[in-house]
Length: 394
Image 1 (cartoon, rainbow, N blue to C red):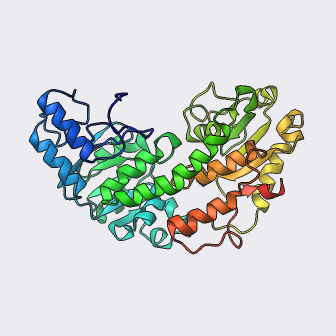
Image 2 (image 1 turned 90 degrees about the vertical axis):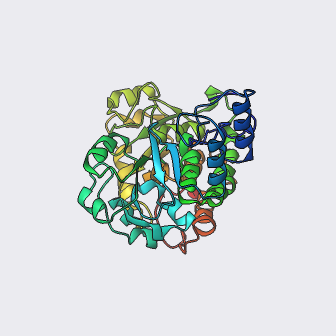
């Protein structure tokens, strides 16, 4: 990424060919930059070849103009695993093997263009139009026959390690795009890319500017200047005892953004660690992701209360500060990923720095997302379980 290009103000580069100045959108600035490339005053960037034909000329400027008017016949982009993918436009039939961008489908209002969803998205009852779509299997275990039967002109997944199998198992006529939606560092880029695919860039920008950035900036403004000593030690637990989130995971990114220090920031992936190592590192806060028994379909917290009790009752854990100070929390893991991750981030920030966020109610932020951003009728005062113990009581 070039450091001093005009118009480059956001923290990400939109990886669509035609984004010649490497900022977060395709607009007149790209035309101006490309004109400079053609006349020799600007250096070409890796996205200058808008139509991806190996040459930079007037045809690339024409492609940029068509993208701006949402009139391009083909969109060429790099996906989350750096594959160059060509998408015939407009996209009318999408197989959504990616549960984490289900909210984007709601926000963009393109449910009628989705022919099927990852099976786990069927559980998203707060999105009735999305959850009622046909199931296509899990991203890691796709139902290839079901996908082909719906005749999609695009498949979107998030499970990058399975992309080679999808490429082998599906007709070449179905392009495959990996958009992760699982890591805070890439979420805005993924949303904006999806906006260009569906021709809903304004809706993507509205979400990014009026919800995502609003709460990311709020949290950053309060924890950005904390010293290392002011960042509590946090043990993040995945879906099994002593299985933790290492430094390559989205949960780790969230915890760092929320002002904590991961006690296992020296490991990658999601390994199982020695319980004695957890005790020796003596975390001040424990956050466990709830993979079941929490979410929009649950109305009581008895099961995640039991999960919390199991953690606190483990042998030797009575020596851990997070247990003795009652700072052990269970948070719905679905709030770690997708367009609602800023909600999860607010929950994280409230648990890690309650004194800095005493005026912030995560439930109000969550309700804002449901009502104002998604436009769905779901009252969190009556339904849903997302955190235990409830933060307003702590």
